[in-house]
Length: 191
Image 1 (spheres, rainbow, N blue to C red):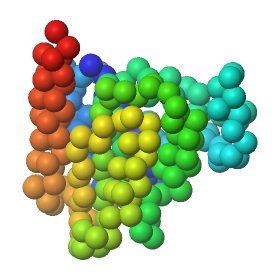
Image 2 (image 1 turned 180 degrees about the vertical axis):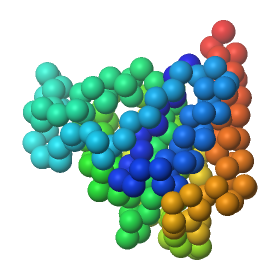
Image 3 (image 1 turned 90 degrees about the horizontal axis):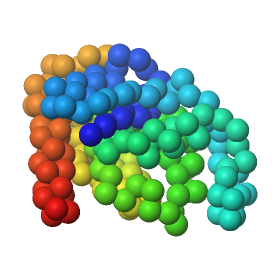
C-alpha cells in the first residue's frame, strides 16, 4: 500500500510537518511506501472556473504541477492532508490544491481511497478548526474520498510544540492502525 502526505504548511519542520511525518514514519514501519509533498514548493495555479476539465477531453488548461500530483493521488491508497489553521481556514497553498479537485467530481478516481486530516492550531478551542474540518469533509465527500481520521492539534504555535503533547503524537501513530485495520476489513470483504 502507498501513503502520500500533502503538507499545506509553508513553515518547514513545523507542527504540521512533524505530525504528518510521524504518521508517514509509522505507516512505513507497517509496510507502506510513503512520500511527502510540500505544497509550498509545488507550482499549482489557481482554478479559473473555465470548466475545461469537464469537457470530453477532461484536461485542465493550466500547465503546472497539478497533473503530476493527480497521478500521485491516483497511485496512493491513503492521503495525509495537513494544514495549520490560518484565519479560520486552511493555508493558501492547501486551498489552491483543494480548489483544483473541482475537476474530479464526476469521476470515481478516488473511490476506496482514505484520508487522514491533520490540523494544528495555536488556539485551544476546537471550534476554531471547525471551518477547516468542514471544508475537508465536504471536499472529500465531493470526490469520493473517505476521511477516515481527523487530528486537531490545539494549542501548538511554536515549531515543535506538538512534540510536547504526547497524546497528539500517539494519536498520529494510532491513525495508521485505524487505516490498516480498515484496509484489512475492506480486503476481506472484496475476497
